[in-house]
Image 1 (tube, rainbow, N blue to C red):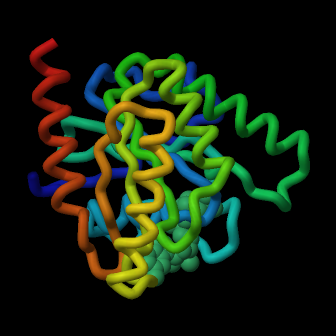
Image 2: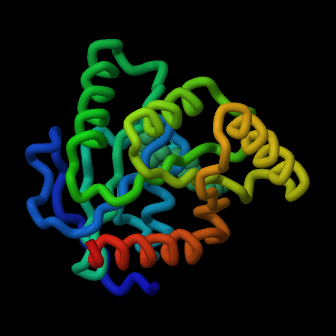
Length: 201
Ligand code: GTP
Ligand code: MG
């Protein structure tokens, strides 16, 4: 699939404010600074579509981008940003959970994980909570360009092995880089398949 048009539609503070159109929707979620906004820009081939920053906590709202006039990409705030005041952190967590649980047209969740790090409790707990709530998701490893090839393979293998300790099978996994662009066409192909399934139902 090719992204022909990518337009910012709106920012919402709660699920009730999100766009009304019932078209397939895909959310990017993950720890603060993992590269959600950068990957959205890369996928859409539009540098300044979603706001990015080297300082964690940049994205604070539910941001809808309309792609090809047919589906939404959603940029969410990151979780686990240590420096944010506790009350604000709680508020953001509630907003994200409410969105994930109650957004009816949410078709798939892309959980972004930094490919440089050892598996982190916070990410594993988040993945666990998605499974408990029977929400469909794909794991996206980000910043692949920041690893040597061998290290990247080792990190991903370690993650897979850990997941298989509590799961019978692995969720879909895509390795990406917003620098080199690897994984973006795979991601778009995935979305294309989900779009088809959405329209059939
Ligand atoms: P929050 O909105 O704060 O939760 O962060 P985010 O997950 O949206 O991250 P963002 O896209 O703003 O990127 C954070 C930093 O990582 C920026 O400095 C990006 O340039 C950098 N970055 C993101 N993706 C990549 C990547 O694939 N490769 C490299 N080398 N840097 C990346
Ligand atoms: Mg962001």
